[in-house]
Image 1 (cartoon, rainbow, N blue to C red):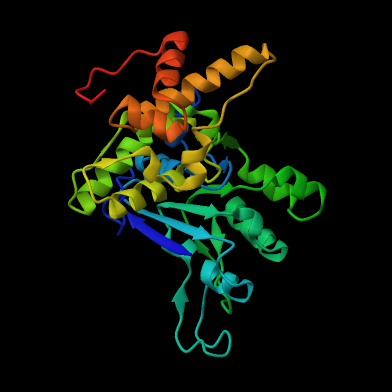
Image 2: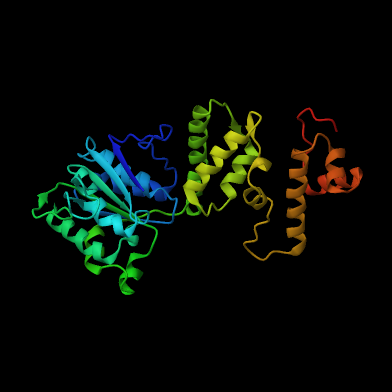
Length: 333
């Protein structure tokens, strides 16, 4: 996959790449580091799980730099066939190989005076790692089939979800290239480790997709709690995709918690056990959560009792024992 952005703009118009949602202390610290390094020419290595936002942070570095008026080129090193990688990166001269009927500038050449993001750099073949190292060191390229070199002015950012140090030890990644690109390391924490960012991100995506699909949909309070509680193994990308799906599929004005995918909704009904406490206390807490949830989904206490398959008076007695207040929201009790 290759994407070329100019002046921070992208074809997917609803994504404002200059917006960086950061409410957690961890992401605010990364923001501060980015502000410091953006004005430099240092190579940056961004690591983190898939979907954490490495691409957005790389673009943010570019937008804050003196190169922001020039091209920002993203190359996914794992998505280009190995047989085409060298020609895509370095370009080629006419007649360099079968089918090369004209000369073509490579992506490195197109990034001159701008920034290049080598996404998933851990997938780059070893023989091309040598050539990339030379480009970073000399700022010169030579097209495939060419006889002369061309000077370039490029800022390099690399990103990966793999452990490059382990790959170096296993002989799968060049040590000299690793140290060359790892001048400023940035590790992006997964979304489960920065829960303060979940709801601000969710609301940001909801606003964007409401605009895209001409909708006016809101989250319920229960939905917000459910979103924040989930572990999000797919990180920010998964959250974004879920919000888009909910906006598309929703028939009403609200996204209810039970409209969310089963794996997300079910996680909110699971009891979190973080320490050993008396069983009676655990049972009471479980009953409190189940009864409160049932009442929120029912039109009356009688209906809630029917759903719980207990007698109406039994439910009232349990509510009194557990300190659960009878809702005063105009429901028929």
